[in-house]
Length: 189
Image (cartoon, rainbow, N blue to C red; front, side):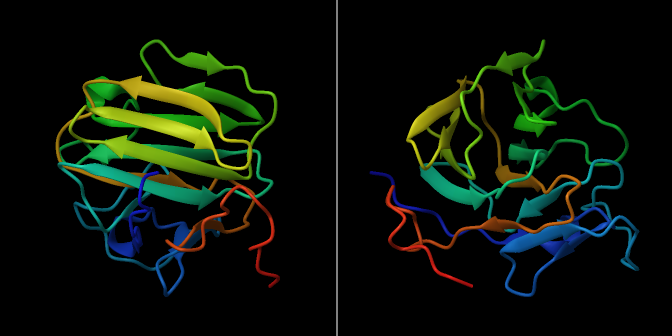
């Protein structure tokens, strides 16, 4: 089993409409630009936020609670990828992303790959193997493989998140809070 990597969100990269929680684990779209400085690190068109942590070697795994939303983007981006403007989200541009849009899952390959899934998981596991240049996505609850970008996932890579348009928070699950494929550890909040 892969050890879960500690991933927190970097508010300096967040699109102005996104608000990151103080603990760096949750993000939501407030639908209006917040008063934040525009820096070269910040996305200004795509509603993305990156993790603070970057990876160049080894294996890394994190889990995201996407809840019952119908839209999200999850994946990784290379440090050298363009962040400003409507950059094309494909591996050649340094973006490796799976997108849920209106309940339809797509791997943003070139051309795009439509993914046929039985059910959209509420928890998605992302496994980055820098040494093999591979990025895989899993449905945590039913241990179902969603998609793998096989080879070529290289460079200095940052986890990427987009909370969609529901207004509800997207949450990175803390290491040690994994579901362990049972519901007995779910905390009631």
